[in-house]
Length: 297
Length: 331
Image (cartoon, rainbow over all chains, first blue to last red; front, side, top):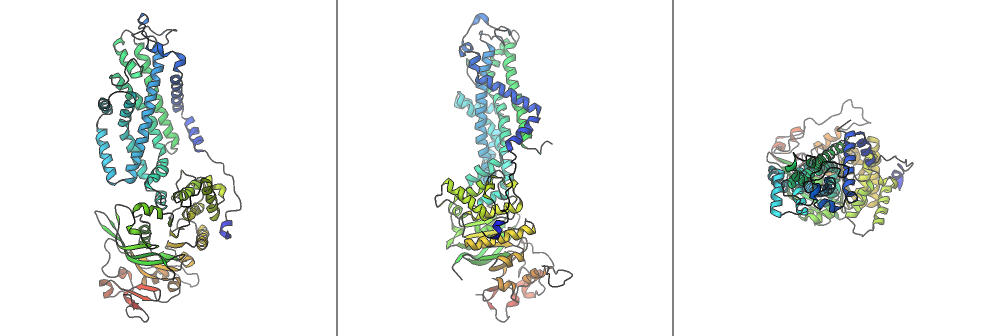
């Protein structure tokens, strides 16, 4: 082993490992607004998951015109709609739909966006120019219009809707990840990886993306809120989820004719939508600050 | 002289942008036998790192271009090799240690994982996961780091320890050639000595050939069999360590280089630095590139590029040796 090997042999001090996740959680806990957001999101998720315990799906679909347009009461917490269906139950089941689509399309956009972003940022050159110019064109079209166009081209359906939604979110994602990757690609450890014979794909997925994960997580979280709002917009316009399946945007759309006679029909789904979008946004903000301690003292 | 492991012949590298062309490396030739060490010495910007990157084929893609010459490694022409074959050579046959250990480790991977990755990439022996972990422990203790620390992250290590990890990664696959690009420049002097003696010891044990890039002549004297002095992208003098450190005949630049080192034995009040700066690599002088700073420069030096003169293993590229006794012009 020789003398050099013994130099550092003498003692092995047990270091108290500062756990990264714990540290982030500690910082996040200090942010009151973000914690509020997190609690609301968790509550809504729990409610959406447990929707079938609160009400039968039957109650959500079945028409009962005898009790139509009732104001909130103990029997119907949020009142009833124009067909006599319980709005509370419809909101809960609507949450399922909205959240599922929101999360799924946000994840889809995150994965595609970060891979494309990492590729354009790291490989660069002509690939970068082509992809970025294409995305410039895509992002020049208003996202709702773009989603409308994609839905119109592909037809409706939950899966296709998710694809359309994530498609609109990809350009923003690519830009964020690309700028993060450009900074990382210059680092010496990336050059060291290349000198070690690591393939481009492996450098991208194992070395560059993990180092760019901070902005990805934050943008991904924010994107869930955007997605939920966009899906509501589409449904409101009649291009999202078809009735009678409950979805927040669709509920709001149905309620617009009865805004004067029965405002509760509009108020509750719209309130749920706003609360969810707001909570996710503030949580995303808090998460960004927690992930990067340099942003806030 | 045993069979040459690496042979660089007339290598010329340019960095081309739309504004200017930088003549980074100009027709340099040297060869390196198995288990031997060559020192590449020169000022900052002399083209040492560019030479190393050309051997690794890691020049910046869009600007760096090898415009001439060849690099043969174990008989194969590296410059003509397809990229995927080159990837198999990098890290396995030729490994490189970078200058700054602070930034040459991935901050979000444990050091053990980073060593394991190198082994996993070049897993010719078909090691299993456990065998790879065993080998990780082995190389860590080889560089004097307790294997228990493999699950820690780079920020938990000091600079010297990080450089040991970098060396461990480079040597994990037992490469035939190790390129050390100023491996100790970013380290404290005390740590420098440790790291250098460790590199030397491991090189001797593993029989690795090495290119030691440095501007520290002390390190060269300690580690190298041969020394190549670079100036403005050209090899101006090359020879065995004895030729360079003990011989009397030198290129004026080498003389200047040695004059710039403080000597503990002689009582000099001031160092004698080489006056002037290195020429602008976008507009190299017509004749000898050192002529603007050379105390012996003649009219001939300013107009005609000098030939190479040899005596035994010693080669010097300077007009002064045209009719010096014992020196022959190289054909």
